[in-house]
Amino acid sequence: MKYDAATIGNHDFDNGIDGLYAQLPHASFQFLSANYDFKNTVMDTHVKPYHVFVKDGLKIGVFGVGIKLDGLVNKGMYKETDYLDPIEIATDMSRILKEEEQCDLIICLSHLGYHYSNNPDKVCDLTLAKSTKNIDLIIGGHTHTFLPKPTVAQNSEGKNVLVNQVGCYGINLGKIDFYFDAEKNKTADGTSIIV
Image 1: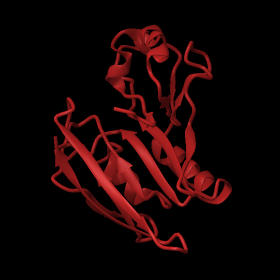
Image 2: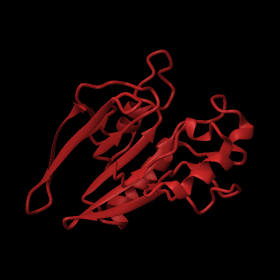
Image 3: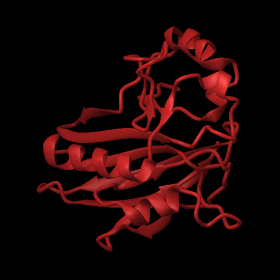
């Protein structure tokens, strides 16, 4: 598939954190997770909070956030992994990527879930988009939501954020194209493509 990066979700702990660690050598891409603190685990130093990719002269910042594991995954499976607030972390990550790293495009890989109508206080992709700034695209997972096209949400400054999720099990492939002009101003157009 030639992935550039992936984030971590609850099912990555199905074989425990040691099982997750054992699979890392089989991946030719990076794992990014900014809100799982692995410092007291075997995963320490093997997962970065973000990465900046340079493609055709454009700097693309990518970071990952995951769902709260407590109550969803047995504590013995994720051990000393600390969960940090995804909104606070995403705010910090997007600031670093925009201001310090000078990224032209910022993407959040999310395993928070698209939306929870039965639990509106639970952090989800739509809440994350609304509560932060500088994120251009949230690529989500966890709720297996099939979106026929990306949702256009408004961030904390009233600017557009694309939120996309294409279901589960590799049934669909999402594609979103961003277009940049000579001054690196961007526009986006995209849909979910069935393959």
